[in-house]
Length: 369
Image (cartoon, rainbow, N blue to C red; front, side, top):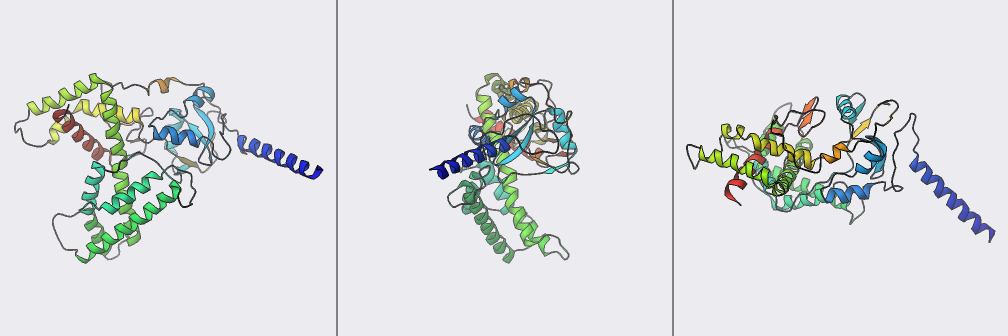
């Protein structure tokens, strides 16, 4: 009777000690305040729930309680979260020096099975839209931001299976195109990749080309698709903004010399309010809610990681659509807004994405009510 009781006491003390070490991770310096959440899981469940609901105020409670710099845990990783604009700017500036890019085992975004932007992108890259490839990407996207458990049936396992199937489909398309490669004027990206692979002394191997061809559709359409959906949602809840957007595009149609012509570059550059709507959509929707960086060297921020005073004003600004009439170039990043990159690097596809969204909004407000 005494032996089982001792075992239970030892087990209980071990669990208590483990939880204590979980809540108070070892560190050479001084970590900011915060809560590590549940053991192992951390705050992952809150992240998944709010990500699914397209709500990005997961850290609002911690920000108000601990300040703009605090510790927590996501998907089994112990991390420090910064919502401080000055600190974030320093982190971006120190990329490759004190910090380096780091990605979770998976990412997540909401993309439907039938995706207009995906279809357009794949046709431009491969010259056709392969239905099998679309199914593979759907499986891949469904498993991004998930627990990295490579067990059959889990979202992470399905994500890896989707990627492997997509790679096989792309390889088959590459081999088929290689057998019929001819010099032609209308080339897609697959033709360009094959030509580069066939050059003497090329650094583009087949595996590198496959990785590139797999990554490009994902990078090109997932953020643009989400931005379009969010723009519709925000415009529906803001009739004044919708009315002004409609007026801007109807004015473009009235002043167009050839009524049946497409959108010209001059017309696109005149869509100032449209650019503001896109800007506000990116700010409000926060398409990429979190950017991860891995610390290479010990960093002392704000006095041994000492947090600022609680700041709730930034979250108040996130809950309503407010368009600044002054307007600015969409790719003009600042420490307060980095919708298309900032500091030392801007998004390479920023202009392409803005053009896609602008054309979509133009046809939407001029042809539908």
